[in-house]
Image 1 (cartoon, rainbow, N blue to C red):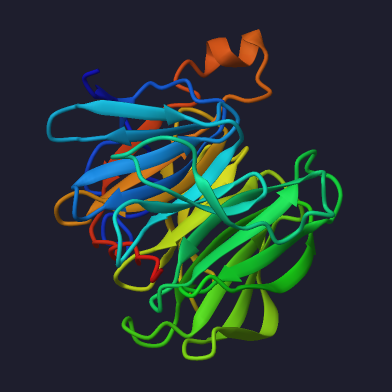
Image 2: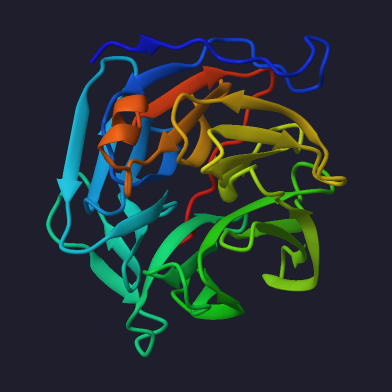
Length: 317
């Protein structure tokens, strides 16, 4: 459907370091229950994203408007393109799997790292520069602290790094020089906390965990996030109706994109020059009155920014 222009608020000064240079627009009024998993394919020049609770993977070509979707037997939450083979590596309810949209069929599981945690499902994730896929699990009810952070290596080995989260989101990387990111950022969503770890890019290990930002009451909760080419973090606010931009060192807020719906779930850079920030949202749990007040809840949005993002890393396997 044609894009729908929506005025965007500009709560920062024009000379600020994180200006939005375009108008926010709804590019797909998809009505997703839980939109997530945004991935811009550089080689296809198309956007992949998921509706977790509807168990669907979507593909949208902004040049032609062409859309496609695939429905699975269980929830799908995050994805990455493969470097040495066609198709995607994805996270399903129980772990990591392979799926090729060109072929279809059922995904093939690679790892199911927590079979004893029957109340869990996997949630957000992405690859690092070394082709390792980092993803977190969570309690389906968003209550028990049974979620963990995992790393899937290109050779298929899976390692648990952190534990004890009700809902996990992220990660993203920043700090140091752009080519060799030295910090991993990871969200403990229910507690409103963003943690920063020292990240060893060779060993794939984490150390020196610190609380980087505590979200205040009324700000919403930190959901999915990404990093731009200047090293700034962009964080979706669940319940906060915005995506905020932050200094990677101080966590100072540098600006924000305000949305017309409260449940903002994820963001990723895309477009030919990677200057378009795509933003997913959700409508799960909304009653009739709230849906009437937020008719674009569950929609996919886009806005042009002053700095490009970075291309999504490929899974090395």
